[in-house]
Image 1 (cartoon, one colour):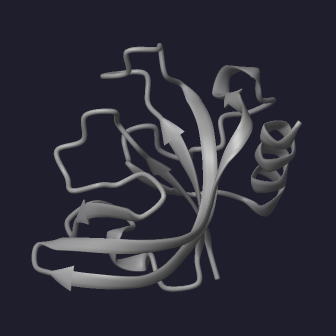
Image 2 (image 1 turned 90 degrees about the vertical axis):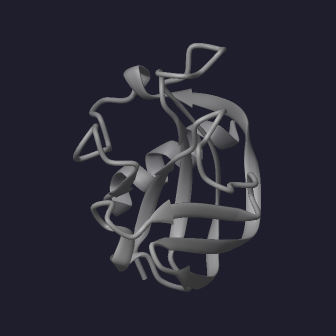
Length: 120
């Protein structure tokens, strides 16, 4: 089981529904590594965000993956919006290992840190 950060734009070009389905192209880095049972954090990127972005706003689990080349859909479960937004610039380090990727692995320590900050 892996912990992921899913970048979720307000106006995504994909068929995303917050907390229900996260859709992505199979060519994206890490796209083929997301599997059922994995956990995720939602991150709102700064670009294309009407409220400034740059924060984490929810968490959940991947229930299953559907693939219709060239698209994969992560069907989600146990989604919960955070009680408060977790601004990435307030964290001791940037948890996304590649700022250009829309799907990033996250360490267990950073995972816990963000969840705790969002649950306050």
